[in-house]
Length: 172
Image 1 (cartoon, helix red, strand yellow):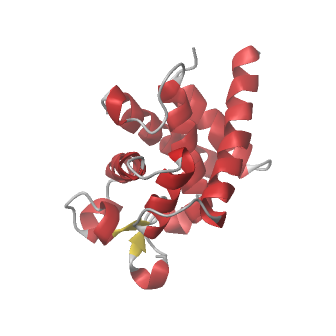
Image 2: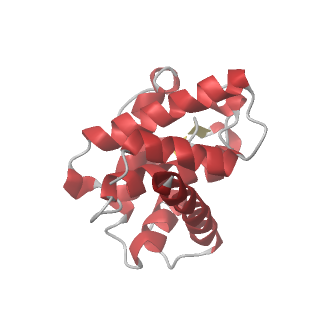
């Protein structure tokens, strides 16, 4: 069984690629801690991936969503740059309508852990859509249920790379 922090950190390293410098490494490690805390605090029934290693897999998925949404870029992480015409904030590019968890922009930007919890909840809510994980990711991205499209396929590909890295790290 893989721990959530180890899964999140291995997923970040796999997706961020080589050349993570020490300063950025500290920030990315902090993201891994926030992801792990969000997943560890969640009720198991509200995880997007369940079953064996469900928490570790959910952590890797949450990293893959963040990586796809923001590239885990420092300026996006610090809320110095916003997406979707200023409507999306933070690592997971949360939209007000779909996942600000009742918080204002400043409060959300000041609390990456809250962002991670809101993103995890938004992906889980998308699980009510048909199409499994692809449908959930499409709902996260578009705010409505639809057949999995390019966004979901791209996140699932990143998730696959991330989980392969987690699995490889666990075998060492």
